[in-house]
Length: 152
Image (cartoon, rainbow, N blue to C red):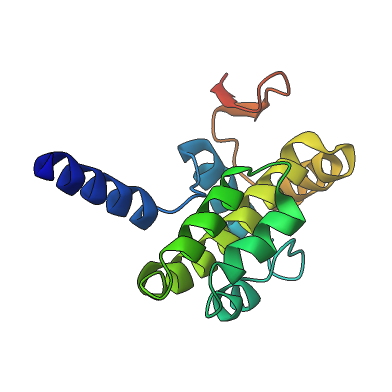
């Protein structure tokens, strides 16, 4: 029984330290492209990373803040908020830095989503590519069926 408790404690710690929101390789590539054009998520924030970190001083506050604003896309934020509340004050160790990181990742994911799936964002991306691409890279434009860039 003691081993089960230790194992579950370690797995819980690993799960919490990994964060709730991460970027896929495709999203990282899209962000790299957008950054090369001078586009940033800053100023287009859904959630403010500094506010999320500051609110994490209260039990689960940063995650409650994020979940309230973007729960339809990231329902796991509610669970992180509850977990941080139940493990307070120890949750300060991971809650403050991870809430900042997760809020920044949410904003980055939303910037990619806007440029890949929103018609206005697609037009902006097309205009940026036309303006800044001087050499064809051998890659086709985004395949709008699934959002992946495919080799031509």
